[in-house]
Length: 266
Length: 327
Ligand SMILES: Nc1ncnc2c1ncn2[C@@H]1O[C@H](COP(=O)(O)OP(=O)(O)OP(=O)(O)O)[C@@H](O)[C@H]1O
Ligand SMILES: [Mg+2]
Image (cartoon, rainbow over all chains, first blue to last red; front, side):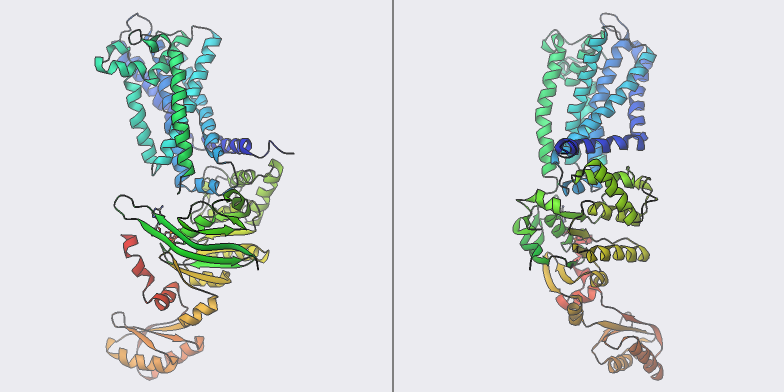
């Protein structure tokens, strides 16, 4: 009959539709997310960049942009966390829980919508990157693989965001908690400086940090300068390690998020 | 007789949190609501009304007791319960960044309606709740009353036979409240079974067939509005005299006219007596006071309030219960 018009998949689509509809109605959110990333681009490309030499030469702006993409994508968790905490606070989660809908749909609909949203932000940032001098040097296939990696990572981060959003009492706490978790990850990494420039004790963190491996993976795929820590496994197979990280993080945070949702108002 | 709602010995304990001990929000609540009737759950802040509604609407698991709603167990057959009920919670739960229409369409789809049906239903509901003109605006721009109506419309999307309304008129101005009452009466006329919570005796009186009074997690009285009022003693006459020295004399006059015991509050110079004579008796009291030379600051005929019910049933005011709540 109307198998596609009802059921878990359709419920997910409805929730996704709802979350996508909201985006242009709260333009501040997208604008601030983009402005924040662009601020980092300007700050590092034009203010600090000149003082940061790359070991094997190469253009700092080409080095910087994949890091900015990875950083922005890592902060996808904040968008989801704040959105989820907001729904919780406004009683919408209760409403959904009182409907005969698939429970998983509230979460999957949101994570998919937030991934699409991040794709939009990524497009804007890539255009901004092209303006400041970032280039893709490895052909279309590698470029597309990099984009898929970034978006898959955004999706994983979004599950982390759900868990955070459902664990905190309000949107402010959701915002702050994700920032204090993600910011260190983006700074103790290869995002802004060649990792050899970091203090020795931080280098192992920078070497294995998922934000680093994602950055290195996309630098490799875009054909941008890619100095890394030592010549260990993450340095040789950043794509593989990034995929490994995504599987691990998803395996941890998706079940945690689902459990949190089920018990949301015990 | 078939019951739409049957609850037995419901217990809910909220675990202790930082700085507060555990709360026994429900302490053995029994309820039955026959199909097609309206039960008013009447109680002050913190009595356990919302907790009861949330358990019956499957949002919360009870820690003790059991409940069947529309014939299904609220724990074991939660999804069947959800299909049968509509819930409008204490605070309007609609998406502020969607339009009214989009909210209702979304609820329709989540109530397992195909797209075309969900669209038609959204339009029907906007019309029914006088929101057609506002249907295309985001809910952010709605007034409190409009949100409330949209929230109720959302609860009706699936055309439930059984409806839970948690304080549907709290925060509405008097005109919106009357409008909401009218909407609710319409639903009841069409045969909807309704469980409604309220802090106002007057509202329970207007809408409910049976009233259950809740206090600190227990049902302390059940009956029709008339039965409860008979216990409380119907209307009261209140007189505030100008001169405190004449309080005692005024008490005799009022007692003589009303033929009932008079409660005196020295501090506010207020006298209260139950009355069965309505406005006519009020006029007579005023005249008698005048003849006795007692000047009056204020006089009123007052219907019993929740507070009066409480005073009669428990011997304390509702406010006494909330000292720790508001802290
Ligand atoms: N999530 C919670 N955690 C801890 N205590 C809670 C929670 N929800 C409610 N309570 C407590 O349980 C008791 C009953 O609360 P409930 O919300 O059911 O009352 P109510 O009758 O709906 O009150 P109101 O008229 O204020 O809405 C109160 O003492 C309240 O403080
Ligand atoms: Mg309540």
